[in-house]
Length: 206
Image 1 (tube, rainbow, N blue to C red):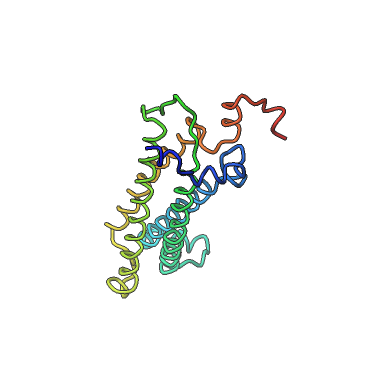
Image 2 (image 1 turned 90 degrees about the vertical axis):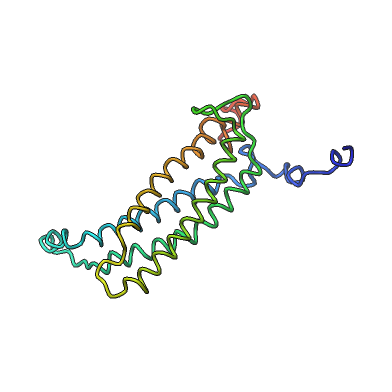
C-alpha cells in the first residue's frame, strides 16, 4: 500500500504548467473538435437527403437557375462523411486527454442526478461508440457509392438516411452530457475553477 501511495502521478509532474482551466493551453480542444464532427456529419447527411429527394426539387432549382446535379449533392455527402470520420479520431483523443486533466467542482450533480465521474464515464463510452458508428457508416456509404448503387442516381438507401438522422438525434443527446460537464461541473471552465478556488475574477482575469 505504501508503495502504491509513493508512486507519482504523471499529472502531478505537469501540474505547474496547467492554467486556471486545468489545461496546458488556453482554449479546450475537444469542444471545438466535437462541433466540427457534428457539423461535418450533419452536412453529409443533409446533402444525401437532398440528393435522394432531387427528383422533387429539380424544378425549383431550374426555376432559380441553380446549376446543381444529383451527383453533386451525393459528392458533398460522401466527402463530408469521410472528413467527419477522420476528424472524429482527433475529437475522441482530445476528449480523453482533457478528461484525464479534468477537475470537476465537488458536491454537484447534473440535472439527471449524475455525479461528475458518472457523467464523464458515460460521455467517454458514448464518444467511442459514436466514433465506431461513424466509421461503420462511412464504410457503408462507400460501398453504396462505389459498389452497390454505383449505377443508380440515388446513391444511398432510405435505411442509410434513417440511420443518419437517428445518429444526429443521438449526437444531440450525447452532447448534453458534455455540456453538463462544462455548465454544471465547471470542467475546464476558467471562471468556474477560479471562483471555486476563492479568487476574485476582477483581479485575475484581464
